[in-house]
Length: 170
Image 1 (cartoon, rainbow, N blue to C red):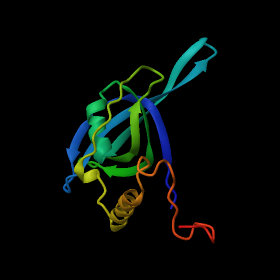
Image 2: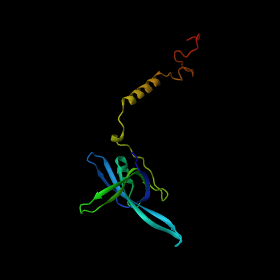
Image 3: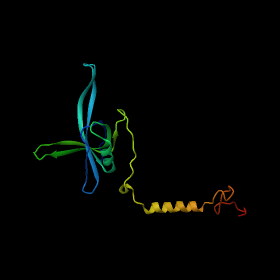
Image 4: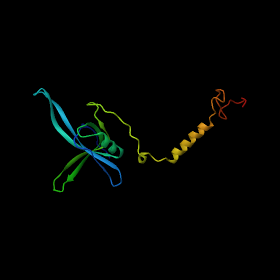
């Protein structure tokens, strides 16, 4: 199945709304206004043509980071999966909503500066240790334990059994 991915550049046009799903997953959403600008030769200057309003939906860690980092009016760049959704209101009106399920979002640094603060991962975001992880760690520990200390052997390297040429004294 093909998915439509898009990158949207614009301004945050609403307050950031944050909630939690029934499963306890953080969700944030906000509207982005992206206005097309074209050069109008008749007027000799730039003119705003159309404004596209898109609802951006963020999940999990991105939802939390967006809620702390973005505010109404901020210039943003958002990338994710584009979706069209049909809706019907309680009053019987219907329409089409354009949504972008964000995989990444941030300030548009072509229009200002920002400072990055690395977030610490939550315990639930850390992957569980698998048997393979534990085995790899154990093998790495054993390899370190088996290596001779370089100060004890006068800089000589140790040979693995079978690596010495035939006839050499062991």
